[in-house]
Amino acid sequence: MEKLLLGVSSCLLGKQVRFDGGHKYDSWVVDTLGAYAEYFDLCPEHQCGMSIPREALNLKGSKESYRMLTNKTLVDYTDQMLSWSLPVIEDLKKRPLCGYILKSKSPSCGMERVKLYPLHGGAAGKTGVGIFARELLRAFPYLPIEEEGRLHDPVLRENFIERVFVRHRFNRLMAEDLSPGGFVRFHTIHKYLLMAHSPAHYREMGKLVAEIRKYKIQDFSRLYCELLMTACARHATPSKHQNVLLHLLGYFKNDLDAFEKQEMIRLIAQYKDGIIPLIVPVTLLNHYVRKYDKSYLAEQIYLQPHPMELKLRNHA
Ligand code: SF4
Image 1 (cartoon, rainbow, N blue to C red):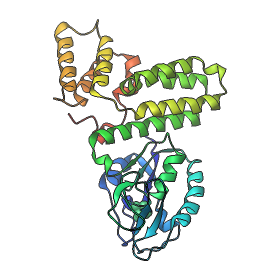
Image 2: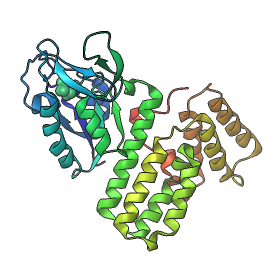
Image 3: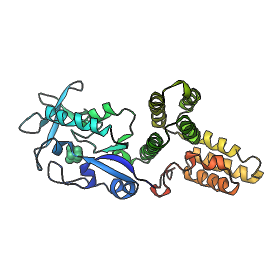
Image 4: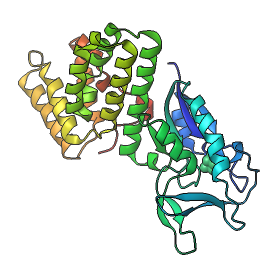
């Protein structure tokens, strides 16, 4: 499989770029996801011109307006960080990025809940966003962006990885088959994945696809991408999964006997009640897809949205 391109904070790869000369090697990022990803890493603090080691930085100010200053000597690095970040982010737009993993809590890379100190002393609130992360989030509102800390949560990890692989397939569509037919096929194979995230977006996207010939293909792809990534950012809840699984079961109404149907319905209910993980009913459905040669379902991304080896959908 062609590796997908992800941006990442350099210290998560084990590079010794932190203020104290250390790193924050993340084995899931490097060893597990790294089997499928090519990383483009950046260390905003080091690459904008700060030394290793260096004095630690803090965000200071109010939620509406804050600066990035060194801890003790109070040197303001905000403008230096911004003038490095903006052209780098422009360059990132030219790359087929599928997502970005940021280092949490950092005054440069943290995407939320970074300590923000009042200008004239006092306790920090966790209301800041790192200076580089803030610009990245502004420039890429539809790119899957997460922090390594949040990726330890199985639900957030699953959602992030699913979005990353959706974006990877979308980027390939843009590079290889930018045509009305390509979009129709892409939309068709993502039907149940989209239904699991947002049935309303799926319907809206269906209307857009039906009118594809009214648009210039570049305008269409931008609109479609925005809806696609917004839809996938909505969490796929157990109720929405249950709805999709029951829909999929409907394709076997003439194939399964009463006992097999009841067994499947029981597994879907157990998943919905949090007793078994999603992978259980999905695995049995995949078995039936192969056994009864359901070619339409075999193409549905919902049934295999990411490599099994990532062990997602395994939590109840
Ligand atoms: S958190 Fe960001 S700025 Fe800090 S060391 Fe890691 S990559 Fe560099």
